[in-house]
Structure formats: structure tokens, C-alpha cells
Length: 608
Image (cartoon, rainbow, N blue to C red):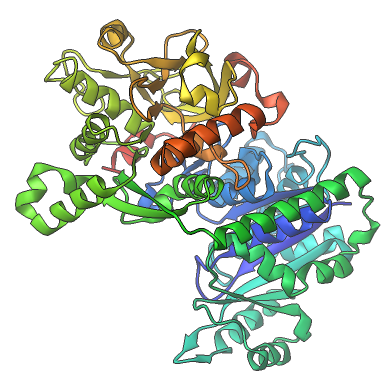
């Protein structure tokens, strides 16, 4: 029987439930258990694909093309698993399923209600998805972590809270545990317990009793024993059921912080985890994971040398918009034994107009770019900031500064080359000017040019490296010298096939293409320390112990010639793709043509 651990939150949203849920799952994996995760988002959207990054953080893309909440990225990174779109439940998905059943007559003429029909649909979904294998064993998971987004007491999450109240009886007391994450404010040095008392009272009134209360402190001061005792007394739990989660130097220390407070021993007793048969091989794998994670965190504390990366983007006011990009840089810096210094640069501040409108921002932005060891231009939509990004790309190319362009950044690197190397002064993207006479970047949908559901190229897709590139291509060596690689995509526009010959004659090398050779997917300049562009989003497949190769290349090159050479050799000998073997197949087998909601174009363009 699968064991379920529900992680809920109180007082405020954005309190860190995702990190605590992921950390709990990681600790369970260190004991040899197989763990999966489900995120519940109570909003009405079908998925996260139509939301602006400033609205809800980055849109995380899965192998199957699912556009989901960024917390699923935390799960994949911490647990080293591959999830599907069904691992993200939204109110929109549940209501759609219930209404479709009603239209088909599945309810046999009954009045369709929140209870039992919606709550049953939620429980059935969780139970079904919790059985799906997500790791390299290909076996059913032992434990499923379920994170309930939002805050207990919200109107929109009420059906999910009620569903989980019923679910604890469906699966049995021994198979269901609840971790409630609550804020403990520190006011002038005094830790206040009243918000936690109030939210636990509300939770108990809804029929859910917390087994563990994770007290989140937004300071670096640990939970005091007196505070712990008071919460224990007024929230009707024993002191061992109250754990403190204060700010630490890195989120990668959170699992060890929880482990030090006996959370795993408690869950082993509470859920009778000893009843699950764990093979010696899985036990050894768990021990190895714990040792490597401890080494990662220890090494992080001993780092002395810095590496500075300038992230030139559009959504720098909401840093969660680039969550996976930042994690990829962090993982790469760990591998290179460097302390990452990330400089956030709003691309609009680099443009000439900013020099007159806001000279201070203009000079600060350019100071950050010219002083950086490496420059990264991530993904985005719309024309805003594009000229500033191209100025940063030009600087990196001409000054031989390590550069990585992702999706939008890749496209702008091609446009910048066309303008300044090929002499095509009017070079632009059809995304900016649909009537451009000779656009460098054109609309190349995967299925349909008219139906919104067919316009986005989504999910895991293969890239084939050109013959002979193994001799010189740093990117190919970073992927272990493989001739074919797989990364996740999320875009509509691509390099114009009609102009490929002209671009390549001028010296631009498209070292990676799709299987048909029609779509340009990787560019690399041979005579540059590291100038690379990816049409895909490799940041979605990074892991703390297995960093994304293109990002590793950027950070290593930014750290110096010796470091990049060392990492190329390490990757050639030891790189292993993070994808399951069964996922790395040809493009026709990978394509998923699930219709997407109408209106996507308008919303995505509003990101400008």
C-alpha cells in the first residue's frame, strides 16, 4: 500500500512548502524508498502555460510537454525523478474531468455536487498518479508526497481540503500523514506562536490533524525550545512533532536540518515504513545519495573563489521567473567549486533610451555586464528588452566573454550575428515584426499554424550533433560526446530555414539540429572561449548532483580555461542523461498533441 504524506500551509502563501516537501522526499529516498510527488494548485487554470512569469513564477516544462507549477521542478531536482503533467492537479483539471463525465452521463442522472463528485475525482486522481513509476527502477513508488498549494482557509482550496479529509479514511491511518507548514514571526527577537495556533485550529476544524508542524522562521535564528513547547501545548502535538525550519545559507541544507530533528524516525514510526520491503540495492543507493548530498553541502561551505554571471532578462523583477535557470547555475557552480555571484540585469536598462530616461540604471546595468565573468540571456516572449539583450550578446561575442543563450536568447544571438556580421541591418524576428521582408526568426509551429493547441513546440525532443563536431565542440563533450541528446522545449519561433546557408557561410555553426535537419537547435562558435545557444530549455533537466551541461560549460568557462578543460574531461567520462531510458526515443514517438486552452497567444504576448 502506498504511503501518503500531505504537506499543507498556513498563515501566508509562499512559505516554503515546496522545499520542505522536496526535502522530506529526499530524506525518505536516502532510506532506500521510492518516492513520487504531486502538487495541487487550487487555481482555475487548466495548467500554468497561460500565466505570465510575474504571476506565478516560471512555467516549468515536463518531458510530456506538461506546463506546470515550478514546485514540480523542485521535486524533479531533489528526488531525481521524471514526472508527468498529471502530477500537477488544478481546479481547472478537476472541474473539466467532472463536467466531461456529467456530459457523458457517467453520473447516471444524479445531481453533480462538490461532495461527493468533485472530492471523489480529486481522490481518484491522487491514487491513480501515485502508482505511476517515476524513477530508473520502473517500479511503483512506496511514498507519495502531496503538496497542497495556497493557504488553509482559502475558499478556492476548500474542496481539496475536504477531499484530503476523506482520503485519510480511504487509505487508512497508517498510510496517511500530514505535515503542516506555518509561519512563526520573529518580532524584535521574540518568536510569536499565535499565527501557528490559529492556523492549526482552523485545520483541525476542517477535519485534518497535523502529525508534524514545520515552523518556518524567516530569520537565521533557530526555533527556541520554549517556542517549541508552547506550540506543542496549544496545538495538541508532542514536542517531537514540532520542527523548526529557519533560514539557512542554502536551501540544500534544509534536508539535513529536518533530518537533525528526527523527522524521518518519526515518519518511519507513524507510517510503519518498516513494513515496506527495501532491497539491499535500494538501501545502498539511499546511503550513496545521503553521502553525496552531505558532501555537496560541505563543499558549498568551503568555497573561496567566486564566479560572476550576469543574467540579462525581461522578468528580473520576479526572480522566481528564472527559478530553473538559477538552480542550473548553482548546481554548475558547486561542481566547479565556485561561489556563484549572480547579477540581475533588466535588459531594457541596457538600451540607449535608458541612458536618457534613467542614467543611473543604465550605467549600473552596463557595469554589471562588463564586469561579469559570463553572460546568460534566458528565455522570454515579446519585443521588450530584446535590443538590450542583443547589445549584451554583442559584447560577449566581441570581447570573448563566455555566453549562453537559452531559447529567446539563442534566437537573439542569431539576429545579432545577422545584423553585425552578415550586414543585414534590418534583421529581426517575425515575433517582433510579422511583416518583416526577411525575418531571421520565423513562426514554425509543430502541428498547426492556426489552432492554438498546435502552435507550441513542447516537451522532450532529440537534437542530433553534426558529424565531425566531436573533434571541436565543447557542448558535445559536455554531453559526454554523445551524437544525440534530449532536452525539453517550449517555443513557437525558430531560425528561418531559408537563411541557414547564408548564416553558416558567414561563420555561424549550428552544431545541433532536429532529426530532419530542419530546425536549428544548438549554435556554437569554434573560435570563442564559450559562445553557445540552445533553442531548448536545458535548465529544466538540471540536478544538484548532475548539473545541466550547457550551464556547466558557461560557469566552467567563466571560471577559467583550466576549469573548463577539467570539466570537459569529467563529462566525457561520467555524464549520464537525467532522463529515463524509455523517454530517449525518436521525435515521432515523443510528440504529444494534447489540445491546449484557447486564448494562449494573447496571454503569452502580455508578457511584454
